[in-house]
Length: 396
Image (cartoon, one colour):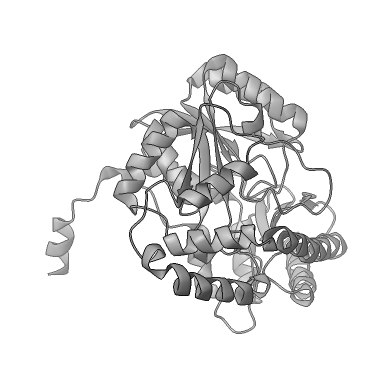
């Protein structure tokens, strides 16, 4: 019977070779007693503004229940859209529009399905967010990559890849990149925009971490440079307020947003009116900016603890990035080491991370790994990194 059932399931070829996210697989380990996890990318639940959101939601239901619990407009709650446009006035152009989306991941999916025909080429940073890479594969894209440097993508190779492959678009996370934690310099942001504009290549700017800055000066969004309508910018409240609310937004030329509108009608009709209104009130009442400042203070402590512990406990030959913000530290082990084998040894000692290869569309780079510092406590960071360092020394 089981074999007959499987024969009936004629799945689309786009699923061939596409597995589940490595991080999602690791989530099953989080319930193991005593496990210290650097594996996820979640914000700390201890820092969620739960009490404030509870008060806001209670008021909204009591005063606006009939409207927020009803179907709404696909683009989003009108007042919320206007508030977001005001907050983004420095980057929105005359021909731009805005749509509320259910997190940045939905924006990545919509952009892929708006732009990609099966077999089309697109460019991504190497390494890059594995969730986005999976989305592009499911859209039947051919992913070509451009390596990262300490100040962002290699712009010389970006232009070479554009000339060679003539891609539809370039996907970038310019600020506190996932997984590397690297921030693209102001100079390179201008170069990326100029190169893509020169060759008519669109830019998908994924920017969910920009407000989580712990050192250095804020940098302008690539979208702020956009005078030719080639940049689609994705933003999210998942990392700053709560991922469970599933509220983000996309800013792009109105022709692109019109296609997003059509896709969203078929995907989920609209993002929850209730959670949109909760985020809107959180912003309007002045809670948001103070909340983000608090997050930056707390996450800075955790980032510093992780970087100091790595420097103390990991052996010579191990390199790490020095993120100015975001949620991740990227580690490069000595050549010849395999982070997947290291992962197995570490899990046996109840400490977890994410191996680097899944973040590379072209594979390889077995000696890399990603570590998250937003979830574990500082004592667990120190304990877990010391444990990892001891195991790495055994491998070396």
